[in-house]
Amino acid sequence: NAGVTQTPKFQVLKTGQSMTLQCAQDMNHEYMSWYRQDPGMGLRLIHYSVGAGITDQGEVPNGYNVSRSTTEDFPLRLLSAAPSQTSVYFCASSYYGRATNTEAFFGQGTRLTVV
Amino acid sequence: KQEVTQIPAALSVPEGENLVLNCSFTDSAIYNLQWFRQDPGKGLTSLLLIQSSQREQTSGRLNASLDKSSGRSTLYIAASQPGDSATYLCAARMDSNYQLIWGAGTKLIIKP
Image 1: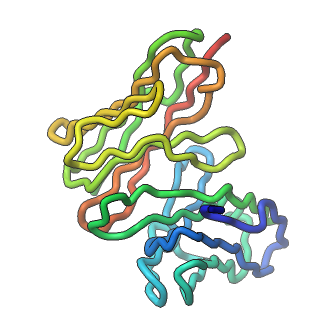
Image 2 (image 1 turned 90 degrees about the vertical axis):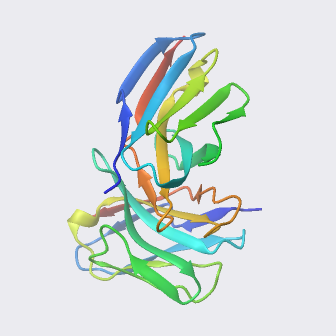
C-alpha cells in the first residue's frame, strides 16, 4: 500500500499564481484533511472532508479551496498565491466516526515557497 | 476550547537513558490520542494510538499512557538511541467532531 501520497514535494510560485496540491490515499479512508505547518505555529487545519462530496473549513481556510469527488483524492487549490502561504503542507487521512481505529496517516508534505 | 500542551519544548539526553515526554489536554472529552514522530524536513509518522477507553499502548521501546481524568498522556522511551532524535507530537482527537488538536511538539536530541 502506498498510504497517503502528496505531489509535488517542492514548489515555488510567484505571487498571484494559482496551483493545486494533490493528495491521494489508498486505504479507503473517509476522513481527509489538509494542514499547514509553520515554525512556532504548529499544525493548523485548513480544510477537511468526511466523505466524497462533503467538505468543511478548518482553522485557516482563507485563500484555499478543496473538493472531494472521490474517496481517494482530496486536492487543495491555492487561488491566488501570497507570500503568507509559504509553508509546508500536509495531507492526512483516517477512518471516521465510531470506527475502531481512527489512526491518522500523513503524506510526506509539500514545501511551498511563494515569492 | 481544547488545548494541547507539550512540555518541555526541547530535551537533550545522553544515549541509553530512559525518558518521558509529556502531553496535557484541557478537555477530557477525547476519542483517542495519538503520538507522532517527525524528522527534520519529513512527514509525520504515527507511533502509537490510545483509545479513550485504554490506559496504555506499547510498541517496542515505546510506551504511551493516557489518563483522561487528569488530562495527561506520556510517551516513555526506553534505552534511548541517537536514532530517536526527532520532534515528537501528540494530537487529541475530539469526541465531538473527530478533529485532531495538536501540541506544539517536543524536540528530542539523544547525544551519542
